[in-house]
Image 1 (spheres, rainbow, N blue to C red):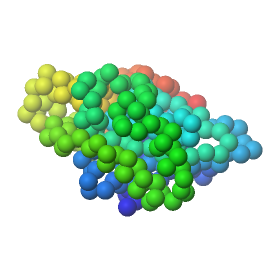
Image 2: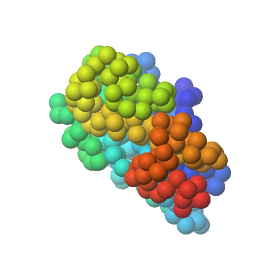
Image 3: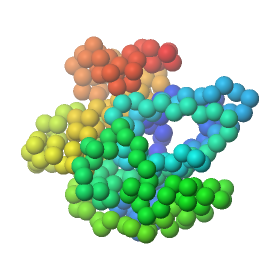
Image 4: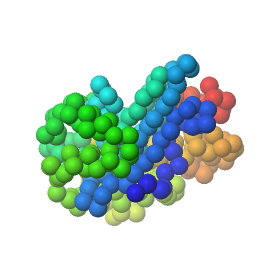
Amino acid sequence: MRYQVNPNRGILHFDPAQTNVRITRHLPSEQLRHLIQHYWFVEWNLEGQLPYTQEVLQHPGVNIVFEQGSSYVCGIESRKAAYTLQGKGQIVGILYRPGAFYGYTSEPMSELVDRKVDISRYFPFDAETAEKGIFASNRLEERVAFIEGLLSINIPEPDDKVDELNKIVRAIMEDRSLTSVDLLVNRFNASKRTLQRMFKQYLGVSPKWVIQRYRMHEASEAIENGADITTVALELGYFDQAHFSKDFKAIVGTSPHAYRRGD
């Protein structure tokens, strides 16, 4: 089934018409829905063109990335990530629900932040075996079926804490009025210490990080669409544009005005 709700938010200055890059997504089967957010597929054809670098503000979830000759488990990337595409190629990925990858490991997910790890560390198959099966077909449905066959070998049990965490993360994503950890504490009737401990253990990043990441997803998208920068800052809970610009530059890597210009 095609994944319906995704405006490519978090992919900075993404324009498929200009880049010859195509992204599609599919939902997992019911059996794996407590673990997987969606499967994602990237195809590009840049033959005869210069390499293209795509910048991304990652969502708060672990990814498994399959690319021929280079596959790995990728923890949450705390900073802006940049991927250089050249020639012609394909990537198949699995985005886990926030906190769901914790079921594969007994260590806090903070140990996986900003790291790429061999697939065989967590799964009873190696990268080469997975790549051969995944890229044996060009049909997305067949690729999904193969991936789900691999993942079904060792499925972690559902964890109520993951569902609880996802309610909080989804609220942050959907409600721009949640601009501080104190507001989360009031909304979910949990202490700040409890929230911080749960986020560190299951996600690897803090509640403040998740709030800032989703607000910057909104900000970058709004600025790309021509919104007034001062208005964007106010709508996202900032009292002044200077504070907003400081946070935006720290996370996105450039000022809001430079981002609008494409610098």
